Image (spheres, rainbow, N blue to C red):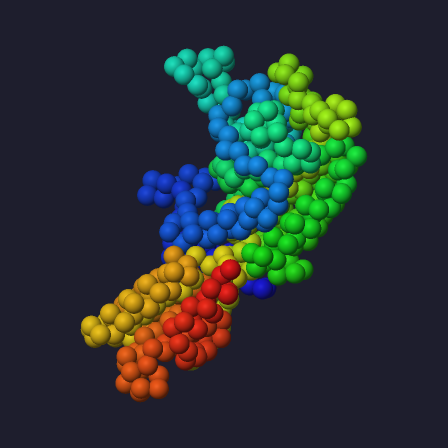
Amino acid sequence: MADANLMEKIVSLAKRRGFVYPGSEIYGGLAGTFDYGPMGVLLKENIQNLWLRMFRDERDDMYSVDAAILMNPKVWESSGHVAGFSDPLVECEKCKKRFRADHLDDVKTCECGGKLGEARQFNMMFKTHAGAMEDESAVVYLRPETAGGMFVNYKNVIDSIHPKLPFGLIQIGKAFRNEIAPRDFIFRLRELSQMEVEYFVNPSDWERAFEEWRKTIHAYAAAIGLSEGTVHELEVPDGDRAHYSKRTIDFEFDYPFGRKELWGLAYRTDFDLSAHEKGSGVEQKYLDEEAKEKFTPHVIEPSLGVDRTILALLSSAYREDEMGGEMRTYLAFDPKVAPVKAMVAPLLKNKPELVAKAREVRAELRKVHPQIAWDDNGNIGKRYRRQDEIGTPFCVTIDFDTLGEKPELKDTVTLRHRDTGEQERLSVAAAAARIAAAVA
Ligand code: ATP
């Protein structure tokens, strides 16, 4: 959608309707942090659950871990992050504002007119201290990616669960990056959530596994409702890849501010396991008992940012149209990710028999899915508009015909469709079946 104000509209709707709020807002905010509100949390859960379903539950070779965010700093020395997880930083000599050198193209002056200094490397890991001492010996880092927690548990999982190769570890969690210039709403954060897989393979098997995960990523994009052709692959050239990667595909999305990385798929070779074996002195090899071979597995890593996924969904679902002579805004979410699946409304809230019947219908629909909202406030058109703005695919209205005013319509309801505003009359059971099919 070519709309210069689209980002502003998305940010405003996200706040107005309880998806995303600026972090610590009553104190003026904290750059690079945002908080998810009631609708945002449900959206996030749906995205994560669908990911777990497709990346873990529909397979036989995936195991979850939930590792600590604080890790022994040696983990990040071995992984190369202490030495190399940095971005080039330039500072304005006049106002001291800082920029990422690789985001500036050939600009040599600051917005204030000041001269920009030489670029230097800025490590992006957040540092803190564990325990009462605040000296160098107590330094620990907040993890910059969830991956580290999986590599250091590779051997624990082998020893406790005994999986055969290939197998993968999977984790959802927070990661922290002291980005020089957090920006673009929830696109570039300092505190972010990642959904990551470390998939361990025989080195000869890496290309097959890479292709398999590449397909799964596209299937996941389709499942959450990012339509075909909106997620673009970029083969990252030599020299631009992270220090651990021999092949990387960036999956990019056309955000309102341009085409940018949404997710990544990397072939990390045996870089991490070998580095941890060297750093810890603990062997990280795999013994293939049938082939009588011992080797260090190689790793394929699909890495998906939750926040960038949410922003992609908000951007692609945002719609404006005219309905009933009025402008309306709605989110055309796929029902699978929509925070609320249906809203149930008694036509009038001061008629106890309508309210009682509507409560009964809601209880029935909640057997299909727990997220069935109730709204008896204001005229019915307004209630529909509120649901449109949070992307609720269906509204179910209970009226006097439901109670049998026209006997042939007894126990039927109107089911209203979000995108078209069309309404149809059908039995409660048929409405429930319709909702069940859409959200499955
Ligand atoms: P970029 O080049 O945009 O800084 P990256 O290549 O450093 O991103 P990765 O290290 O590959 O990102 O991280 C994996 C995924 O984590 C990314 O594809 C993205 O979805 C998410 N991600 C990374 N950094 C951020 C951030 N600062 N804010 C939000 N999400 C992020």
